[in-house]
Image (cartoon, rainbow, N blue to C red; front, side, top):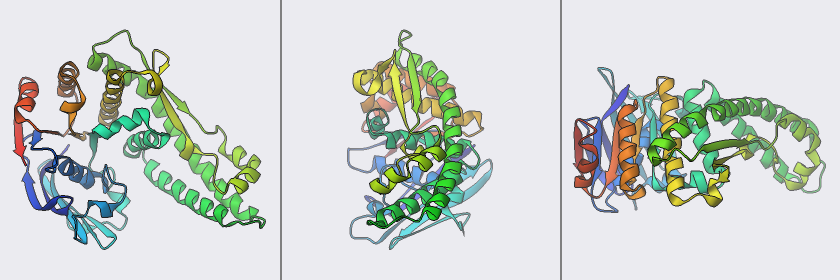
Length: 356
């Protein structure tokens, strides 16, 4: 189990320079809206996954009028401290552990783990399939050896194939080259699909378990369906070559797969109430923590504005569930320190309040 002892931010978002020390397992981060509470959580996430939870491009994390940022944190692995540092400057990112830079930044993934629960997570329920693929792939990248590497390879080949298809303007495509692309996509795609199917078969049990406890409702039954874009990518590529050439993009494969969430056979996206959607989302995240802990991964839990998201009953149920789960630390943001103490003091032993 790895815990974060301290973090230092330089020119990251709205922090010119700031250092924070964490002495307890439960940390409440308080302050007015817009002061940087979410940014601090995102910096912690960044040190675990080499990227922002909220921003797709690193340049948007740089403080205004600056040309780079730096995040450095001290993790405790047992009794041994380890410094993890990210520097992004002029479009180039370097990541180091113990002051030794990684040759590939992806080598850091899996060393430290975090689970974020944030307001924008509602897109997992109501948004496009991209958000659900990100969620499921995120679990598998930590749990399954080789999944991240094959996912990166699949996406690289996919980009190359799509770029080639877009270049064709009336000329006959090079079928030998497309055969090479398709063979790689089919092989890697089959592995991704297999792992996703296995995860999808295991997740509903835990989602149902947590949903009943979060919502205090035993009558509603959550269900998850994995919707494959194709069950046989190789055959789809072979038989659909003409369609892909005309569309100038790859029309089949796990990059287009999706999941549907149901409660009592009613589709959550269209028919669930806001309370049901929130309960389903929290249950998904708790299931993620449970599945990681079964692989001896105890993540840092990052709760952003959870007090604004849940009513008092669901909030109390959530904290009671967290008290039973295995995690390294919990960081939570809220404007009011008294609310944090009110809901957590009877559940957690020692709580640190860090006011920004």
